[in-house]
Amino acid sequence: MSIRLNTPEFRVAFPSVGRPKHNTLNGKEEYSVVALFPKDADMTVLANAAQEALIAKFGADRNKWPGDINKYKSPFRDQGDREQIDKITGARTLYEGYERGAFYINLKSTKQPDVVNGRLEKIIDSNEFYGGCWAIASITAYAYDEAGNRGVAFGLGNIQKVRDDTNFGGSTKATDDFVPVAMPDATNMVSGMHQPMTAQPVQPQYQPMQTQMTPPAQHQPMPTHQPVQTQMPMQPMTHQPVQTQQPAQPAQTVGQPMPPMMPQQTAQPMHQTHPMHQATPMQTMTHPMTPQPTMGTPGNVFS
Image (cartoon, rainbow, N blue to C red):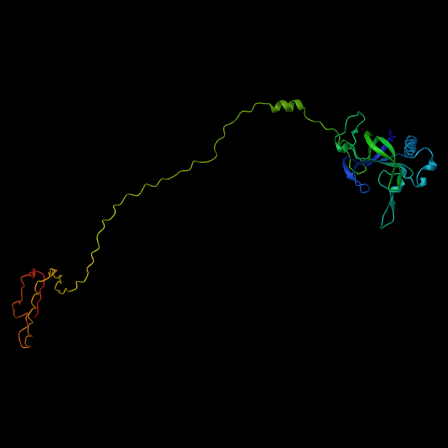
């Protein structure tokens, strides 16, 4: 069972309502905010809600509650517990906005909360909700008993920003840094934008390129090709007798007598005149079946 209620006004610290952060203890992605209550804040309503959540979880008889009640974790924590000790100087300091003796509560949820302003308008700009501003939140008190850990916690519902204050991060709002300045009348500016504009012709800034044409070269007739006269040395020619093929002899028929052999001429004596200087009659023997040699065909000549 859970009990839903609204918190008293608190100062916002470490807000993470636009994007969830990973919780290393439970492994969940959670939206969160730390609520810093002033010392004079009335915490009665929240204390009663926490007591009712424990009774709803473990029963009305406190003697029957499991474990040591004194070890139950309370949602109300002293802001002085967040004191930081400098490792070099040993100086003790608190986070900005924290105060010793005052309480704070961690408010968490896996569901993204809605954030509105005093007019119930949803805040879209993340810069409008920052560490240092004042707000109230809708919360739910619930008791838990997980792995030996027992206690009460407050779940985060939605948030309403109620007023601004100094930013814990040191940054300031633009409205605090500047003062209004005189601006030209927007109507005149808009009307001036609609004045017709006369287009002026654009004069070319270049000079035309003067191109000089070169007359084509006159055609020269091609020289007439003269054959190269090559004088080849004349070689003396020696008259060689033309050898011609003997005419085919007719085939001998069976029973025909063989032609007689040509008579053999006796050798001329060495002292006789060379045949080129002495005409010798051609001695030939003819056979009635042997054709006579024709002109230009050498016969059987022996000199």
